Image (cartoon, rainbow, N blue to C red; front, top):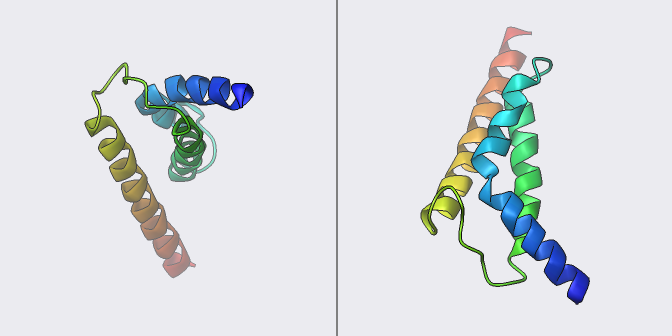
Length: 93
């Protein structure tokens, strides 16, 4: 249980910086930007899920609960935009 608590604490800190992590794929310069952002969102979501094992630590960038609401709103928006992009790409083919 001790290792899980340590991981939850570390992932809680990682989750605090999700706005910066979500924007990281923009600098990759290859591949699909929406796919990269969505993939990074899923990685941060896993961090969020593991971090829920312990009481949440205060966010360093955005105060709670707005931090979590904005995170999930970003994920939903990313899924919708990625879906629209896939539909448009299939219609062009």
